[in-house]
Image (tube, one colour):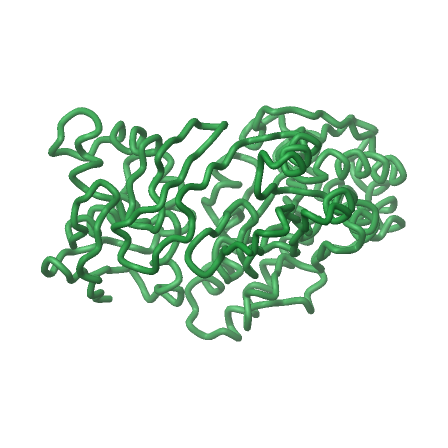
Length: 433
């Protein structure tokens, strides 16, 4: 594929963007050495071979085989365009791209967007400032400061006192605290992201798939939705989202609630009352710990001896991990962009040792991933979901109804299909009364 680049585009550091920067940026993902890039390249961009410069404003991009998602994958966040000379000059030899350069770049990023990063304190704060050299419509904000406040009560207080203009991750049962104030309001949507329970298929206590089927079948997700989300979340029958268009598969019944079947499978399994530990983050997921507590009660009703472990530690790659809360976004509008980036052969779940594939799974995956016929892709995806049903590594709980609180004078709302961790403050996305 040959691309003509927009002329007159400037990076935040004043450099002009050219084909050299585009080729450098793409090949850092297509031919990665930096470990985080290797992971992303493998689970999303493994079919891309290289980018080649034709002239200062023309680039060719080559793939290894026919690519049904070519244009979609060209637009992923991970292949953002960054300045070659600036990045190479951050550490070591200024003429060589070293892994240490990419590590340093993550703390002092430079792009071409409507805002530049003026300050970044990892885990605490990021400050965006309008970039007056942006090629497109002028950014509506002079500055936007995003601050981490783990506690919901602290965020609501900050909004009520005027310390904050917008706050994130408000559970439905907290909305009245905001909407009852005439100076405040809320916006929300069921986001393009699943809260999930992942299961370690290789843990000695969970190798029997009947145990994991019982763990899944005993969870009443509709009840979780009513109790935690006031019915506003979306409970899926399979790993699918309406934004996937022709590849949306609401007809599949991969995940369901059936307590009697859960008890029967548990009785038939090798389970002998062993403790099954469920890890949950304390603050990261809205209603995450409450959902985990409810799941422990549901497991107990099925005869599963569950234990909740609330921890800030990431345990997804720990061989001792049994089950844990997590989220699975739709990174792009395709089953590959949600299910696929996590449970593809050699993807993150398998590489971290909690999921296994075999030749049959890989063959089905190939038909799903690379077929140019939508119907054949759909048929192959149904086969993948049947494999997941019989030997489950994951249960999508629901698409959470994430809410934002804000001053009444702020005109902003989440866009359909956007991941809730992204705040869009571009021209046309936010304004003020």
